[in-house]
Image (tube, rainbow, N blue to C red; front, top):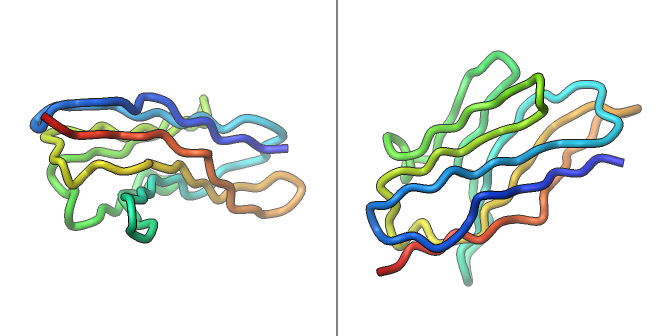
Length: 118
């Protein structure tokens, strides 16, 4: 069984920063793409950023220049450094990973809430 557990969410003022972490655990053979998605109230879940095994990254236009995704493959962990946060960044942030156990699966974490408000 594979688990993705996010941490690091919370309440922050506009212009502030937060760092999210997501650790994958369980019977993992390898992890391919890892990423972060978010879902704001009343909206669909959307891509925030993804990172490949080789370190290639892709970001939503709305977060480019403010957010940075990184990963520590030895720890099966992905991070999201969020700077210059805006109220519109308020959402539940979900970790996602394409990985291999005994088969290829796509796994989701349960999410961590980020609230940006003054």
